[in-house]
Image (tube, rainbow, N blue to C red; front, side):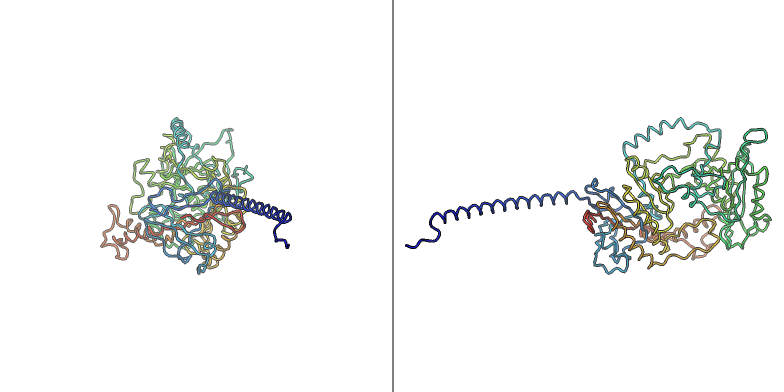
Length: 605
């Protein structure tokens, strides 16, 4: 009898082996499913832990926190760039939404934009922003960004400190208490005599501060003089008597820039004018600036002394020496016009505060009205240097009478760099005027151009928690702003603006290079701050000229003014519109991920 396949002991053994194999396969399948589920859960947890940005598209004026950050503790570094000049037109985008709604505008890697393609590749959206300001003016977006409200804890500490300082409102008998330090002078643009030493740099982490201070001061040419250094003791072995003189100058415009037109000096103790002279211009006059200087062709025709003559008189025996304290308002301008380097100054624009707090400075006219209760610079004939110098004397005496805290404003705002220092975070500010703008930053790097700035950003990221940089070449190329020029350079023609196409190409490459260098989990933010401000500035200038012509008892009637110089209600509406347009900006966000070339959290809108 033939056997049936599958029957007998051998077939039973085979069947058992097959059942065992099936059981093993089922077990492996379950394990793979479990592993897959665990991997999925891990991937989900990883994605949920990633940092990212969210953007509130509601009313730009009313919202309190337009940008939110998910999982901020996972961000290792933060890089912020202000690049003014990037607009929706430059990126080939649709115009920004009309206020109050301001939803993000999508970018595309497949853009046909001629320039700045890196922004389309690195960022998913451009988020509308609005610079601060009132109806007709725009305030600094940079200043707003770099300052923040103090915390509740810090506010309590400040209140206690203010209460403690009330005892400081005592009479000050020595005006030298208010003399600016060399560092303060350099930071405010004063030129120091060669014998004044700047304080040594103590931090190896910071840029050479002494070098930066010199950079911020005007350069000296052969026409400059410096106050002679007086001996520490007189012939009797005693410190020489300290003179305190208030100084004010009026300027005129010539073919070689502004020149000194008049100088007045008032003695602090007697409040008497001890020196007052017109100055004969060196170059042909293009404008006497009469409405500001009070000078005219007729008046200056009587001048017999040149700038060199004035310098010689001021530095003659018995006049100004290194012990003399010169008092003035933004005195760096007056000393610059005199081309005089002097070591001891009291500046009323520094010892008194603007209502917004430093670095904003108050005007002398406002200080006189606010703290002295008097009106100055009201004459239709222009300013009077004797009146301005006398006002500075009165302000200093008032300050001495009521103490060092008189004339200051308490602001519950603080620099974001100060906040970071308090939280043991390292910060860096890179760009022009770093020591003035970001004195509280851990590291300050004063750079001359965008190439240097971007190199400094890349080299500082790894050692700092936050790096802020301001790139201005594009703004210069668009002629929205002009580079700072020291007073000594005003005698030469201004350099032409950078080529726009070259600037855009270089900027595009620099942004791509920066992004490629960022460590994992680095947040990159680029904000523009504002749009083209030139029409707003032009209209404000016209309005100011109209106000000057028509205000006061000596103001002109409209019929006495050419119609092309009139300021109309329509002009006022145009100014408000242009102001609102100028305030529009864009912000871009992204965060680098561990994988090479990856980026996430560009915008969760």
